[in-house]
Length: 140
Image 1 (tube, rainbow, N blue to C red):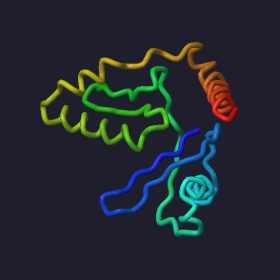
Image 2: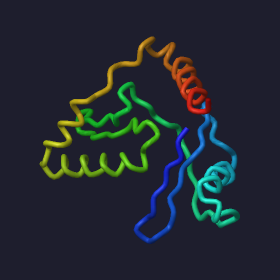
Image 3: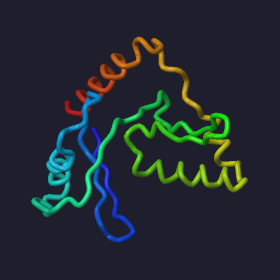
């Protein structure tokens, strides 16, 4: 649904793209991401990919990251497919909280998402249904 990219501090391309609606990652993540990268940047066709990784996309009901504290543990997750950008901001918020500068951390922590409707039993099937619906809308 989304391709995202940016240049790293050392001038390399950080690229993510493609979507899957299963918990099983592709066997070869670089091969999975390559056609998406080459569609956006045709000049990179066949360029080597130095590192590749993947994981599940965590989407919150508000589409905003969930930042907070559970006892002494600080957390940030639920970047809704925009982790390349939002995880950097969340990291800064966590560091500020650790340094005793809590204003921005508390602001984001106050935006905690509501519970998923349908509870635990319907969470996975409704999530997949929603993702498929919006992917279909994006393609029409």
